[in-house]
Image (cartoon, rainbow, N blue to C red):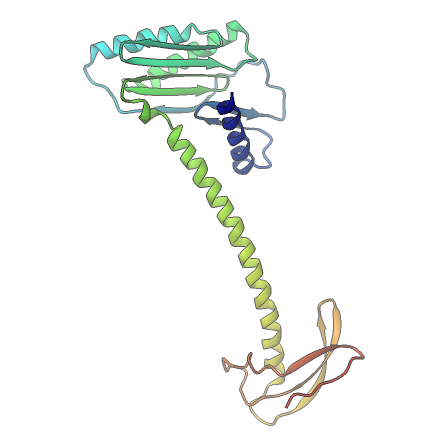
Length: 247
């Protein structure tokens, strides 16, 4: 029960990140399935193909195909959940709990048919429909099918990318804020600096939702000089505040 709870918690976390603000979404992990919709879907048959995975093919192995077909026939007759094996081939199938017995049987029949038609002679295969799924594998091939390992890796990478992008946006906002402040100083320096005769002047400048009087004295660097920001001679005070003159 703990493993089921842990799996569902992971599904909730991933579906919230990857499918945020969606009206409907579903996520299939290794061991659990989560789905939500903006309309009532409980008890309604749904054989839409959601996901499939097929391993490498097996050629000219009559015994394998016989064992596989035995397992699939057994899985197709499941009511709710079933595990089956024949020789070196194993498998399991399951329906969502809200399906009736007849709807579950019909869904699994469709899943088994899709396993054969979509994955052909694969040594391991899994098909997930809207409300049921079926999987089988030959001994030694289960690892090629568990991914949903690759699918979960893709989800994990997507989540990491989203988190990385959000972090990047925060850093970018901070940098832009710093540049805006620096640009204000540079703009004042460019406005007030002239490479010729030094002058002092007062300006009425909007800053931080208020107006400030600025008294500044030009420096000897022209506006295009890279050091002008370091020698920005502007001092800001609220209107009515004191003046300071920099030498």
